[in-house]
Amino acid sequence: MSDDIPLIEAPKSRLPLLLGIGVVVLALIGAVIFFATRGDDIPRATGKDATTELDKDRPVKVVLGTVGASDAYWKTLTDAAKEAGIDLEVKDFASYPLPNPALSEGELDANQFQHIVYLAEHNVANNDDLVPIGSTAIYPLGLYSTKYDDVADIKDGDTVVVPDDDSNQARGLLVLQSAGLVTLKDGGSIFSTVADVDESASRVKVKAVQADLTVTSLPDVAAAIINNDFVADAGLEFDDAIAQDDPSSEKALPYVNIFAVRAEDKDNPVLLKLVEIYQQTQAVLDGADEASGNTAEFLTISQADLEKSLHQVEAQIREKK
Image (cartoon, rainbow, N blue to C red; front, side, top):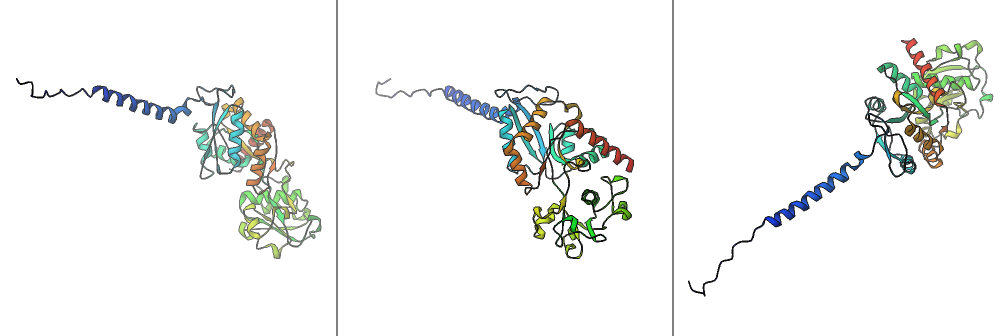
C-alpha cells in the first residue's frame, strides 16, 4: 500500500464526555433537590418526632396558620422567632373556617386568628379539643354618637341601637351594660339579645338593627354600637367611641384573640416560647396594632384563665342546644 494514502483515524470514544455530562447533571439535580427539600430536614415542634429544645444553630420548625398573613408584623414575628431558634412558617388561609381543621389534622402546629368564642363554637360543633395557650388582643367594639360626647349625657329613655347579628348583638349589649346604660337579665352572656334587657332597671331603650344600618341610624338615636368594619366608612374615627369593651371585664374575656394548639401540645415549650416572643416584642405589637387601625387592646392572660373561659363558653353553647 502506498505511503501516500492517508490513514483514516478511528473515531474517539465519547464515553468520557457522556460520563462527564452525566456527573454534572446529577450534581445539578442533587443541588436542586437539596435546596428544595432542605426545609424538610428541620425538625418540627410537634408530632411523632418533635424536637422541643431551642438552639439558634439548630432551629425547630413551627407552622402557624392565620387569616391575613400579608400583614407586615408576621414578617417581624418570623424574624424575632428566628433569633430564638424557631423557624416560623406562617401559612395564610382565605377564610376563618379553614385554620382549625388544618390544626386538628396536623397540617399546622398552631394557629392565631380567632377569639375564645369562635374556638368554643368550633370545638362543640366538631367534637374537637383545641385549646388556647396565649392571648394577643381584644379589638374593641365601640358605642358612637353624633349627639353626645359622653355616656353620662345620654338621657334616660333615649334609644340606642345595636347590630342584630347574634355575636355582635350580645357583645354590644355587654358594652352597654358595662357603660351603665342597661342591665341584662342574669348578668348577660355571649348569647344575650335585646329580649334580655331588663327595661325596669335600664336607662335606655335598645333596638336591634341590621349591622350596616347602625351608622345610618345615628341621626335618629342617642347612640349606636357600630362594628369596626363600618366605622371608617361612616367618616368616624375609632377615637370617637364614647364607650367600648372593657378589656379588664370578665365579660370581655371570651372575645380576646388567642394562639390555639392541639390539646396534647398545650405544654409544648417551643409553642409557648413563640407566644412569649409575640407578647414581648414591641415591634410585633406595634405592627399588629397598626394593622388593626390602632384599636388593639393587648392583653397577657394566663393559660389557665384562657382555658377556663373556653370551657365555660363551651358549656354555655351545649346548654343552648
